[in-house]
Amino acid sequence: MSDFKQETKCIHSGYTPQKGEPCALPICQSTTFKYDTTDEMGQLFDLKADGYFYTRLQNPTNDAVAAKIADLEGGVAAILTSSGQAANFYAVFNICEAGDHVVAASTIYGGTFNLLAVTFKKLGIDCTFVDTDASAEEIASAFQPNTKALFAETIANPALVVLDIEKFAKVAHSHGVPLIVDNTFATPVNCRPFEWGADIVTHSTTKYMDGHAVQVGGAIVDSGNFDWEAYGHKYHGLTEPDESYHGVVYTKRFGKKAYITKATTQLMRDLGSIPSPMNCFLLNLGLETLPLRVERHCCNAQKVAEYLSAHEKVASVNFAGLPGDKYHDLAQKYMPKGTCGVISFELNGGREAAVRFMDSLKLATIATHVAASITMVLHPASHTHRQMNDEQLREAGVSPGMIRLSVGIENVDDIIADLAQALENA
Ligand code: PLP
Image 1 (cartoon, helix red, strand yellow):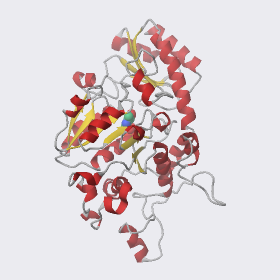
Image 2: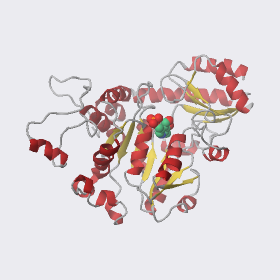
Image 3: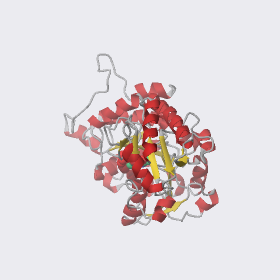
Image 4: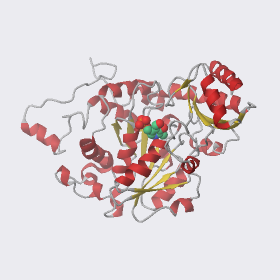
């Protein structure tokens, strides 16, 4: 499907029904698959033959949706996980072990920050955070001989910092490590990080890809471009025999698909964060309309951002679609069609005014979520970033009075009318 445009891939990639087969992607809700001989199934366990045997490893519905996402990102292979958190965990853990080190942008989503700063530390993997806007030299100074990956988000949640992907890719590659980019907010409709040098892309498919707030899921896509074998022992989990899998050497056996195959056969086998086929079916429905929805989200958000930035009670608005925004130029370069539907802003009255405003909303819903069809609002310092101290909040680009608004695809006049009446009470 690689010659088709994104809109066509969203509908057709990953599943091509043959004569008499269902047009809609079938839900293969089976844990297991039948074989006739002992040897047939043994070949699958040895990775010597292709085929399904147990859904924790692979399932036809899940694989079809993974193939669609790989195609949308322009990658060689993808794996789906049961959440975005699991995707980011696997993406890093697939190439890191105790004693290793990661460099990450400090503005990333609070859950990923916690994963890298706290949980990975318990596993013996250290992380150094760098300012997303830092110079290439400053980012480079965070690298150590044991650094195995550089991690960032295309559009950071919730600070809405736009990543200079080329800058990050250059620093990563000059240190012989891959750049992993969480592309959840931009989606491959607005940005394809592989075209700018990223090596691995992750997603919380819970967000725009699903778009209806009905399933929690994640995805990892490999560009196939990073040369794991070029650095000797550094990525030995990929380039040397895996004793837990009959001595397979992933790069030798699977070439450009080595990274995703290892994530499937080793991490999914041992950690097991597989999405259900039913959830993958729901995700696929969301993907079919992704370009339509993303276009409307961006268009509505642009109008809402313009309205808010002209309002006397609003102190500041972060939205890269606004010409005066700090990230406008980067957004024009990397996402000329639009960024996303999420806006963050601050009221003159700070934290107290934020709470009064949110409690006065009638159409917009207070919810811990973004990117669904409904307009949603959240106060990061009280909700998603609650575990952070003031210094960590500052590093994450979150002020105590910041409000995160995920603009939905309702009629924009109704959204603005709701904001207007709530601002009267703020
Ligand atoms: N990455 C980003 C950018 C997110 O915004 C989130 C959740 O909000 C995640 C990852 C984690 O995804 P999930 O909630 O699907 O585990």
